[in-house]
Image (cartoon, rainbow, N blue to C red; front, side, top):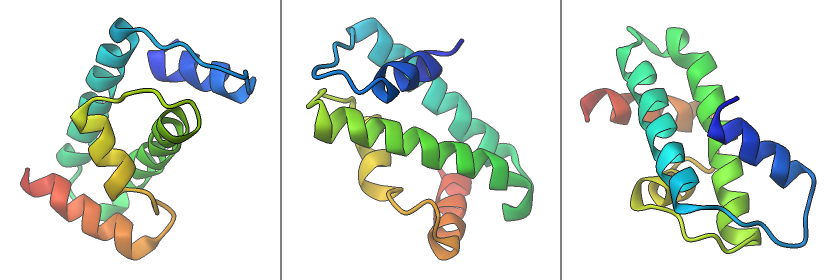
Length: 103
């Protein structure tokens, strides 16, 4: 199971506090990077929709960790929390897809 999946399970259990190690945060960064690379490799928005949906779920996890549990995220993780908070919005998905493609 991925670190993202493990943390998602822990968050869904709604504990009063959440402990996340530096190693887990680093692994999340790796998983996030890999996901963004998969999106970047897609030829068009339609082909990237599944990965963008995953990115939206990833963002929700990171936002919960940051806002509810006050976990200090990495800069890359904070960027996703701030900039992809409406992954359900088709216009935002298209905008973010284009932005990923040029980075």
